[in-house]
Length: 637
Image 1: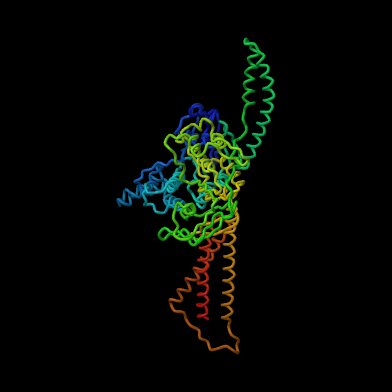
Image 2 (image 1 turned 90 degrees about the vertical axis):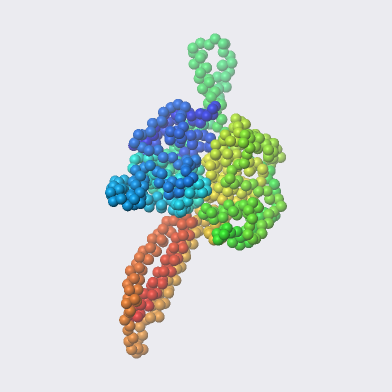
């Protein structure tokens, strides 16, 4: 079933053409990711599909039998509504049936209740409320009485995401789900849950994301928007990269041929008189087409900066017995760590675990409760925070950078101007002289990144740097960081980014505990999984040894040593206890098997930790039951 068709779609803003004469189709079951640099028109294209923007030309046909649902960067809500009330503002028939049922419970009107129950049956709405609460729980939204106006930006995004997933689940009609950067403001556990949810769901999806692991797991079609065109790639992110490389190689070969022809045609054009025949006019038209190809610039600007970094001394940064709490919430507890020259450290953990707090304490933005921080005299921090840029109302991009310095020093002793530096970060001359307020969210993040690097730091601190950065910028940033000679701290939920950059992990595991692990993010998760499996095996081995020892202690004596029988009848309470144990032991063993199976298939370190704790508690209870069962059996013998 075809959901959406577009033909010769064109959209411009002023003199800037975002895309021109593009064509595409969305069919039922497609899961499509859109890849492009910021400012290429990704979000605009999504808004055109939603009817929130109008194309300059071309046609978009949306099947009348489908509903288009958008998860956008901008969330609209009534600040006075509770989370539960906000969730129930959905207008789908199952939600309406659910609201009517709740209303009938309050009124206690039998006729109204009977009608509501019939409608609940028709709309298949009985399980919807539980599923809604499960989705909220997975996204760490537990208190549904909180007012929307009291939530943080990240919490609002997560509530809006829960509402959208519930709406998609509630709709009986065919739905096209459009999601613009859904993983922003989610920790790794939430990202992996959403990834699993979307990959298994029978939905039609159009997705913009910078998370390449997420993209690969969820989508099987990639739309690439570049140079006003749209290219379709069937397959993984790796397939897209390969296809893109082949296309650019072919284009370069075509340009070389066009250049040779262009030179010959140019000589002919210069020789022609003003009055031209029809035959020469067709040749002139062909010349302009050849000129267009020949002048195509396939060189891609990249963040290749071999800058003159201030030398790092012997002492970099040393943390000694740091502690920090907010009330009863312990974030750091006697934490010590010594950063080394060139070390790239990733910091991971749940939202609210204290990651950003540690970054602020290191830089002196926030006080510590106790402990010491020793910073080397030559250290110059560069901080890329989540808060974004602070700028004057009408300040231009070029002036914002020139306020730091007119020129940027390179390692070879030369310098480049602020304008040249901006071009390296994909800001053309027109954009450089535009107000910062006119930039897109992604372009502001790119300018923020450039602002940090332009100050020439030797110790970089990144707090969620991948949010709102496009994949082209992320790729060149990763290449830059891999060659960076200074030290780096990165807080990020982007698993691909972390795996490419970090060689050391500090994992916030709760209650002030921070685990020091040498390796990248995926290696840390595998290590956690392996440790959980080993602990389980050890507990099983110890249990078997204890049971064997207990059985040996109660072996019957030989006939010659046999004492008079002291057989005892169990009391009513003890008999009931024995029956309960015999019923619960198989259930506990089955539950234990299920947890072990989950552990074997789990890759999320947060879930591994939670499952390990459950397994430990369950194993302890199982051992208690088995030991008590032996005691009761002995009393019967």
